[in-house]
Image 1 (cartoon, rainbow, N blue to C red):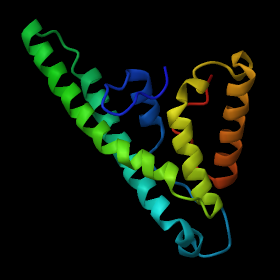
Image 2 (image 1 turned 90 degrees about the horizontal axis):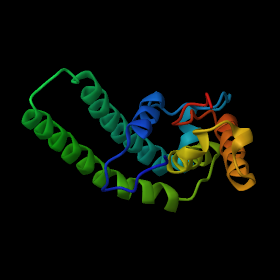
Image 3 (image 1 turned 135 degrees about the horizontal axis):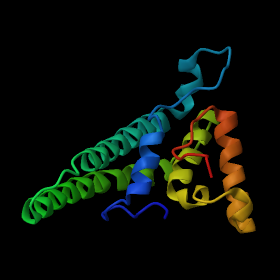
Image 4 (image 1 turned 30 degrees about the vertical axis):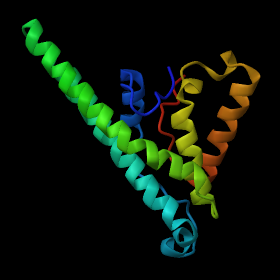
Length: 163
């Protein structure tokens, strides 16, 4: 299952993908000063930092939910689930404008392009749910393009590449 629109509960698979992100941008090996590399895309880098932080908050809530699977009475379990759902939905509400801003901002460097590609991978994360040879041609093309951009930009994908 792919990304869930903001305001809805994220499925556990997507939360695990968010956790796998390692939640850091990685800069490509380049002899120029890192600050010079980022300057043209400074706004995108800031948005990406916020995006990754919010994904890690969701991941932490999902991990906490998995860790708290000890037997409890039904009422307590429903209360915990409702509380967790409310927290995740609040984070998703904060995430929505960040996602829109990432897609609206122009990418002026390979780092900026990598940030946009990483976000796109998060949005179409279902393309990594199956081995690439099982994807339809259009999904395969998108996945390969995102993989290539993230590789060149030195940006880690927000999903596992095990499929």
